[in-house]
Length: 233
Ligand code: SF4
Ligand code: SF4
Image (cartoon, rainbow, N blue to C red; front, top):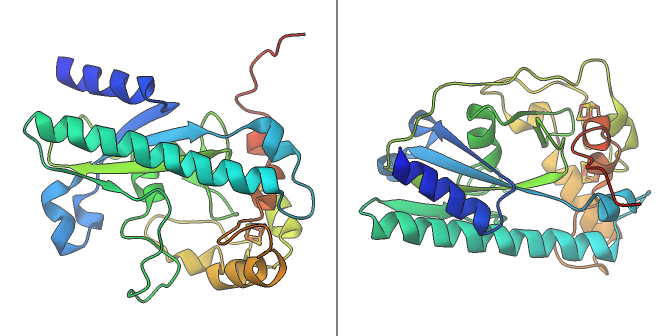
């Protein structure tokens, strides 16, 4: 337990806002099963930058998205090296990477959201995004897979979108179906990833390659009402 506490403290020292643990063995491809436990890290995004998003993405958000991904990759790389130095197998899942030789062209080798939801850190909203219990969708996630035993059970949090449809109505690409996410459901039940990606590519390539609009993050009341500290006057 002392080692786990030290590991968790280090992840936070390196920049993680929050950390969670889950067992994801049954959700992994055969090659990843030897590292069937997941350490999730989350980074809280800048409210100021998110609040500037209106009906299109901003250069500031694009840069923020990229630099937070870089920080996540940095933290999870340091985490995996730390675990390896202590005798465990570990691998970091890229913060943002699409694997094009799979059936779904818009996903990575393992979805961070799956581990985060299993760890009880939040749920998946109608916007198809992870909604943190504390910060709503204004977070980005990273994952380290390891064979280290973790104190993790099935801790799923119930989806709390209720009757809200703000993200569905605000999405300029009409990429959100309005359906609620259910454990084990296909992503296409909630979001048309191709429609989202095509819209970004056709309208906002000038902002940067792989830009995301962020409207479905900005409008979500779960992000607006949560995690606001008392700012200095
Ligand atoms: S990022 Fe923009 S286009 Fe894509 S789902 Fe969200 S609101 Fe729609
Ligand atoms: S905007 Fe509303 S419906 Fe969309 S994810 Fe947030 S709470 Fe759920």
